[in-house]
Image (cartoon, rainbow, N blue to C red; front, side, top):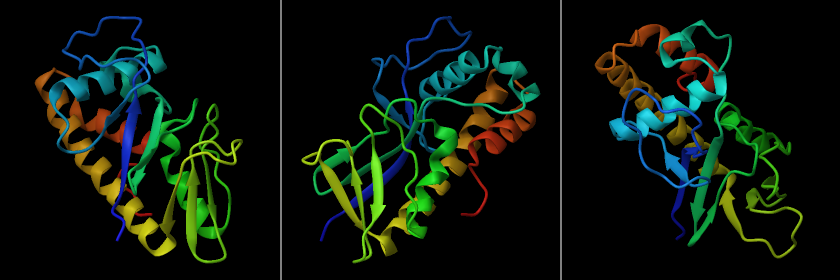
Length: 190
């Protein structure tokens, strides 16, 4: 039986500024999983990237209307890994649920990740829809919803870790958590 994994991930970009807190040293265009087990350096990297995208310091993020950051969902299954396409954002992770209704969500480009629901109840997630021989993972639709619920649980845990991180760095935790939850839809039921 195939084992599947679906994780919310931050796509690492080159930081243009140096944040006032430690950040994980990661190569650009790699992916950092987000969950309650994230360490201070990973949370610091996430916060630095969100701050840079918003072009405001972290203590002013709560004043923004909405936040974005590169990333999305990383799917694993049967020894294959599918990563978010270019320009995909973590704020759109819930769009993956559209495939359960037979819709085709936009999951980024170059490579153009695609998820489609077949008549057999299998969701095929292809790394590059433009390449017929592109790697893919086939997930039963019944399993897919559970995987999405797991992502929501991971993001809820991550939000708790961010609250604790904010308190250690002198940033008001509740307003920060509120804008992150609103922007990235971390805790709302699917």
